[in-house]
Length: 295
Image (tube, rainbow, N blue to C red):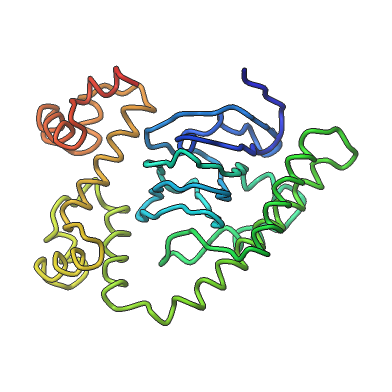
């Protein structure tokens, strides 16, 4: 049975694949919500909120924009509203704390916007997930639980207290980020930089650029070289990464919009809906209409 209390974020203990579609959209900057339901969503989503996720136990695979990474115990990761994200392969013992909030909740006459932006804009060259020590994990988990407790009781200055604690969480996440970067920046190879540049370009231009050669030209390398370094770094070929991004967008549009299959094919710049259907079926094992009807 779902229990909803109006709050400006949501904090969930989630088991199973409760990780992609979250809660109904946060309304404005000051609508707060707490949920204790188990969700099971398997499709890509995009919302207007940030999500800050602490993994207590178990694991799953997370895709956020150009990054695909494993979520593991004693890690914290941030989901930006700028990206489509999805989750898969959740372990049976998965347990996470999840905080969902709008930036406006923090910046509305409380903290300076540039201060909040600095905390939310992490290093774009690395996946936004950070491992934390046992001592740090205990402190962060306690902070989530304090937010949860504050959201469930009516006290004076409730929203101000919650804002302060959310900001403290963001500072703790950035502290973990800085520690991870100190340990990994020196290992940032030229090959990694090129592959990361390619992935970012795919995020920006997948609707108009469909071939490896087009991306290679933008990067001033040969298509052969780009294919080789992407394969070495990711285990995937470059064309597969382009197709995966188109497929992700197709799933998102089919699951979240009222557009017809033909309209989605047009939006994704396919020659016709038949071409789009063949492309989609090759990746999903079923055609777009079957996918949409099965949601």
